[in-house]
Image (cartoon, rainbow, N blue to C red; front, side):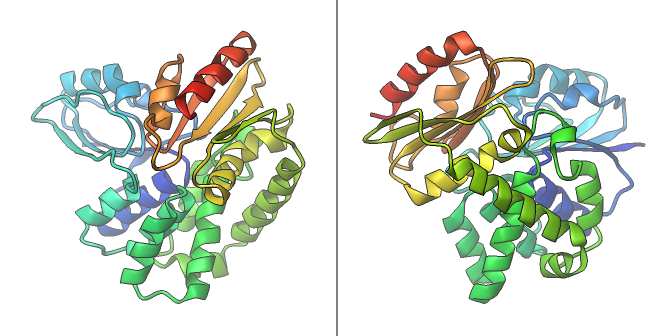
Length: 318
């Protein structure tokens, strides 16, 4: 029997897997990548009797590969909070999927484990821009304001590290980052002990300062669209910048576009809580788009599609 752990390389994917493997150690093959590297299940060569754990990766975007693995007799356990479409019913599939607002994959794992490693779920919630969820989990642990601030920064830094067109854009490849944090049941000890934490924090703050200097390309009463320059720092910070803008103006929808190395744009969308249209719904209207209700993205929007996207964005968030 072989074990495969398939996870998004962002804060939520890292922390979800870390909680599970603290509770259930396994010598697993790690399959991950940059945040937009969604089609991960197709890389898994599992066969009958093998066990595959999937975390924070869209089922809808991996449906064909999932069905192929089940047909080969692999056992799959799936934790996710993104739009899934119809969830297959199969004796070899154990699905923990919840797309409600305020839920991230690490929260689902926290529920599954009865809160055994909840501090890492706090990190993930903060990193996924779920401030209220993070505060609720932190309250349950009686964390001090200072401890919450440190875990909030860690979550944002882990999340920031996942954005980029390739791993060359990142401060540290997600597999290496996971192996660094996997030694620490306590995230505060991780912050105190690992130099990469300070590196990530300094890089994120520098990139955010650069992004703050870019004015919006288009604004309306309830929405704003930004186009960052074609630069490595912009590819790294696009998602974090979108999260920050959404947190600062929770009633306004935000779209952040970053030029891709092969042309077109990588798009990050954040929708306000009361919006009739979710970010995932808007993004699914474009090839390579998806996400969850309050945060979605498009892997590659052609340059010719920019104006069409702006119109749809404006219509969705009037």
